[in-house]
Length: 368
Image 1 (spheres, rainbow, N blue to C red):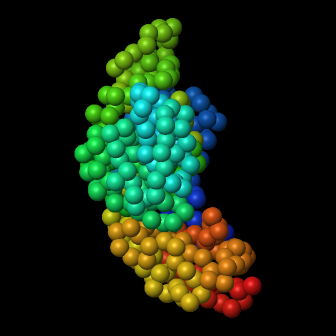
Image 2 (tube, helix red, strand yellow):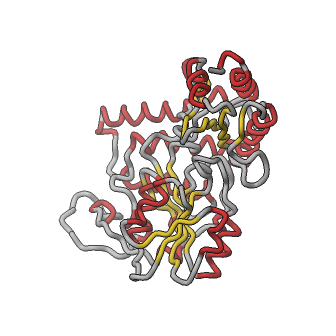
Image 3 (cartoon, rainbow, N blue to C red):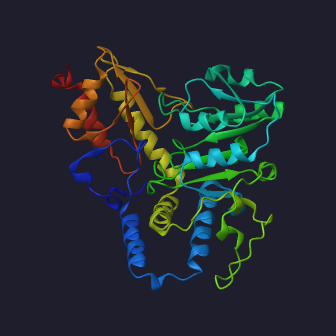
């Protein structure tokens, strides 16, 4: 992969190993954010058509990213937005259930609890737990707490056999690994982690057959007026021909977020998601192979298809929080989640940075 560290800022001299929390904006996105601010400072430069054209450009770019069609992309502001759009759009019978993984990320579980019965089972029992009452299986592709990646193809086959929909939270995977849409019915994701967009960005890809089952619960006026000028806006007819646009977040142009996110997506697509995934996995390899297993227990998978770009570990002596604090003091930003230390490595990180983290973890001074 080409050298791209220059595409990102210097992080104030710190090392950012926390993309699983927030992905940084590349320089091109920062420049685009300035353009958006300048447009708002001089709004005569904003054309009426921009409010329709910019969201459609984003929709098309996201479709390229996941390998779908623009007519299958809902524009959102988070993972939760897409999950709610599907949960609220489906109609459930009294004995229907949604199957989730016990201990899964709240954004994947909570929306369904508003609309139907939810049953949680261990991840390794999920496929066998799908039954005749299971309407939806809602899962997180890469677990934020364990770094485990699910086998979506096998799970999708089990769902198809039972007539259930597979709805996937891809927020810790999209941008770090390639997407195979044949393995999901719905894919939802935020844009501010591995896609390096601003906070408050997200989308959902919805299989056309699933989209036909969804009922919009909102009536955003600008969507209803799509294709019309702003010189006549008193028509309040509810349209039924909007497709995915009936589910878009309100104000989908949102230039302050949309323009910089488009710049980030263009950069990632220019590099190539496969190249990014290869780079990220080489960094994970370097870290995992260099970690002292006598002092640290690896919580996330060490190898194989279940391994992701999230490396989760704990100190054998029990004081993982002290290691997290020591890394932070030394200028390395990681995450402390559920009692474990989590590092996430992305396209702007380097082998030398990985070596520096290992050096700090193995330094006796980091021990309590």
